[in-house]
Image (cartoon, rainbow, N blue to C red; front, side, top):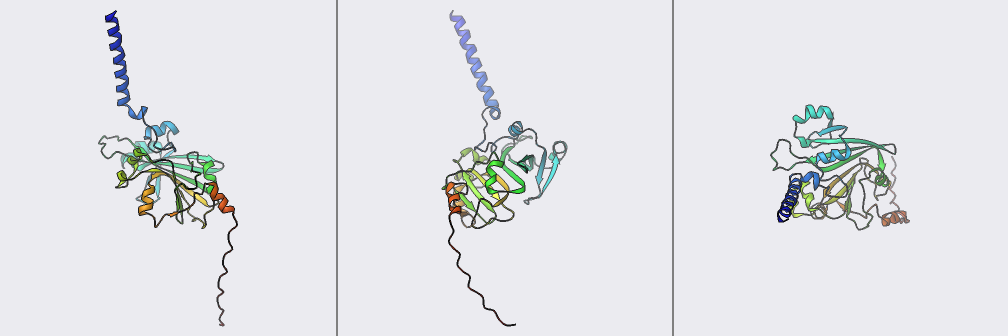
Length: 264
């Protein structure tokens, strides 16, 4: 009886050790998860492909400009990926929703300390483009991953061509995909940046046209400390208070001083 119990105990301990070892050896398959509610940032390329399938194309950026070369996935895998660093290739997926062509492009980063030949790629940014442009108010219905806060006090900023919205709590794990030199000293939060090639109206309205959305991680503290001259704080455009403010009657504009007319 004692011998039988000892064998059972040893066998159970062995199974526990084996299962623990498997989890330790394959953390990406068991423990990996996106950093934020967008569901993408922090995923490995393999996990992204499992979620969305293989991309329809791959593109690489020319210098720092928004100029890209697009390749069929088969051509990229066989030839072009060998000419550049693997993280330079962005996986591209195209969808059509409500008659709008929506193109997702996923940018990656790698662990600089990883010296393996096939380094693990991790999603650091999602670039979503619209053709044609869409209204600011349409974005939540066209992009399932876009869930802006409805809190009027949620950190929101603008320039003449973009709106920057923060959402949710900071994630310490997200520092891995940040390129900022002082990333370890700041908190990093899910951010949506909405771009308008035509320029945004002043005052901002929900009818403003948007050409592109970036889902990334940014720092509210960085904006307030070092970017305050380029980031104007605004009321959250997806809050009820913003809608009510837009519907409120605006004070009449002052009459311009007439210019004198001179004889020719």
